[in-house]
Amino acid sequence: MALSTTGPISFNDVNVELGLTATATLALGASSVRGLAGVASGPISLADLCGKANEITFTNTVQRVDASIFSLMGSPTAAGNYVFVNQANIYSTATFALRTGVFPAGSTLKIINQNYIRGKGGKGGSLYGSLYTTDPTPGEPGQAALYLDMPVSIVNAEGFIWGGGGGGGMLMYNTRGGFLTDLYGGGGGAGQLVGPGGTVFEYPDETTGNPGTLSAGGAGKEGTAYPGTRTSGNGGSPGAVGQTASDVAEDKPPSSVVGGVGGRAIQLNGKSITWISGNNTTRVKGAVS
Image (cartoon, rainbow, N blue to C red):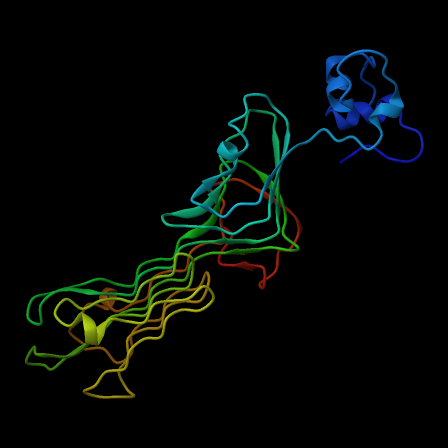
């Protein structure tokens, strides 16, 4: 919190801004006070401290992929009150879009998010093999938007933190004789990168599920042998689980037709969050756990 810009400032106020006890002994010429005031040498007064804050701020204005706040802020070695202001889109190609990194002991980190932080969508369930030797996979999970390595406070009144949607389960139906009649990949999960539709080994042009989009999961595909009654699962919306395929064969393993779990909006990793604003279902999609 910055010192007041109007009215008197006391030494106690300066102590608190520097993270000291209010009654600590402090001289105006101390290096910590000069650093806060921005007056390296020469005369200094309490007036030089008006409006000053003991914070180190980095404002991100460039689209980023798989980013680290700690790295973007120069991998600092001294404890401080760090503020990361995000004004650009940050997204994921792997397991998370943005992570905090670990700042020096005694540091605090505040994230002010004013744009999108989005996890990757999961691929729809797929079939690898052939019509007679099958190796099906369930829908892939969506990925996390933000990963915590340390406690944070978050201002999200103008931003969005969305986990990736899980991929939809693939449709697998066969007669009791073992001949597969309907094979369709699941829809891809929402996210950035979007989840691709699931594929079937021998007929990718006809049976690949629909990809997700930034804000919605891809639609599953309807079986041709029994249209309207058998479909692969839709991909999940941001942070949501992918749908399970409908009306699947009894002799197919259930795990091969389920959707992938939704990606977390924030993966806590055992760390804590102090929400200042923007913690609602519109701006935060996916689990915070």
